[in-house]
Length: 186
Ligand SMILES: CC(C)(COP(=O)(O)OP(=O)(O)OC[C@H]1O[C@@H](n2cnc3c(N)ncnc32)[C@H](O)[C@@H]1OP(=O)(O)O)[C@@H](O)C(=O)NCCC(=O)NCCS
Picture 1: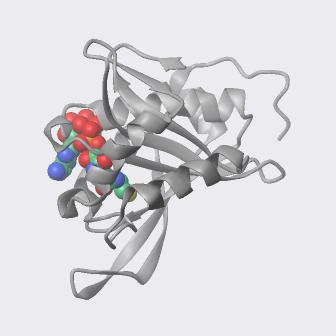
Picture 2: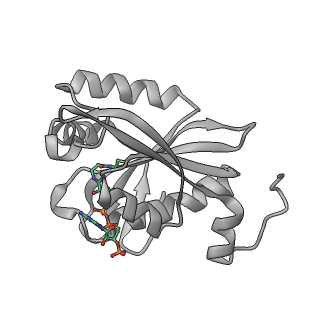
């Protein structure tokens, strides 16, 4: 459990899955996600079982502390221990919670887990170049644009660019003034 002021990140439980199915069938939520096909509880259960056994990913449910309510998920995928990097993904599935700083807070809870628990050096992500809310959210968390993949996604009938953004551990430590641990190997 990763606990912050307003949010906690905890393991995803089987009972959470119906909520995720609802969100993953909402076109507004999935507008900038890869999930664009109808998606049922069996699909989500298959994903849940697979990710439990897959050590290259670590997913969390995003909970609001005060209300004990689930609002989304966040995780690190493609965890690569040699290169010390991983890809971040996030979904605030409850639309009524958008724009209230929860995305930023969830990422800020996940970053120390990635950098100081998993000992990662680089956390990166992909985001549609038109997804202003997500780009702003990632930028506020310290991510910088490092590349643009031209016409990399097909969305709403047209090709769009996708951005690669990343945050390196030294940048994260500097901005958070966190002491470097001795365990870390460049
Ligand atoms: C993208 C997402 C994670 C952002 O989370 P959020 O909780 O809505 O964002 P936050 O409230 O933390 O906002 C972070 C920053 O983005 C800004 N922002 C939020 N919505 C915005 C919008 N529609 N346009 C521009 N900026 C926006 C906020 O003002 C804030 O900036 P500030 O700190 O300077 O004020 C969330 O909306 C989401 O999960 N959407 C659905 C799934 C998705 O698209 N995931 C990302 C795929 S790459």
